[in-house]
Length: 399
Image 1 (tube, rainbow, N blue to C red):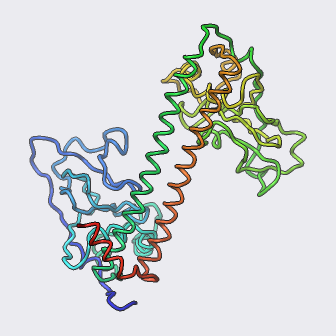
Image 2: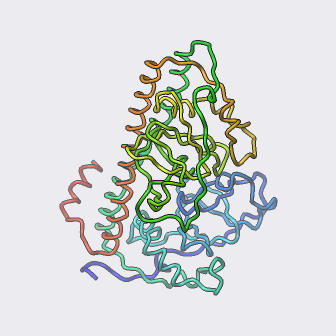
Image 3: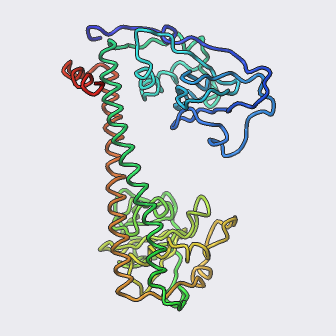
């Protein structure tokens, strides 16, 4: 352990709070703890009310207080209430107050939600059934951690906050590009709508892919697309796959060639069904039977954008549909505006530019998340010290 670092227990940083709501006139916000998003309203997290109708026994969670789930803490369910609102949590949670005056609570948040601490929680959990193992306060408080001196804690918090800000900026840019793309598709198609309609079946043919099993996949070989790769795709076009089949499967596979659309015929929810991506790779690609190949006479990038338009999505399936799969007959019957070839190319090119910008922003965000993870691992372990000269920068920013 480097000079200035000290070994402390979590019980020296926190003290538990068992204050209950008791009798109340107005119902407070009921919180839950997400492993990714921290403290958040429970009905937002679960998308429905899960709290008891009687809250008098629920624990009070003040703003800036800490809380963790005794059975899910090793998955990341520990956080500080930074919502700015006091509320309550289920009695199953452990509520704590930060009491250390010699340490930075924001540094504590970075440490307690780190990958290393997740492993520590798991190692110290009690019980024999995996999903029901718990970490009670009596065990949590005795966990020993190494803390750097306060000035170094400040440096680490500031540096990670800067990376977080840069990541958030990139994520917002990606969302803006996606929103602009959604709006632009309908506006551009409507602007070039001649009033004529034609069915997708008149413009091309639909063929369902061929079924493969997990054991068929190999590390490299014939590229294969399945529905999951389509609805998680950011762009309107694709040139690479993440799944492969043996080359010997080429003869019996159903292949998409360059320019064909590959359409998700199923999905985890209705919104995923019918998403399309234009295959523009040099080599043909196999398509799984949870997707369709659409061989058509449209500009490929435009065709992909068309499938994201309101004109197509509104006919794909009712918004409240429970249908898990689209049929080729439904796809073929969808009517679309007649748009000239030059306009198709212009729309496709614009969509491609927006896709490129969104992908670049998402890539930047992903790289910054990786940077954050690597930085945090090194800095929390004490393997590397941010130089004292960083304190001058902190002072200048504060001024």
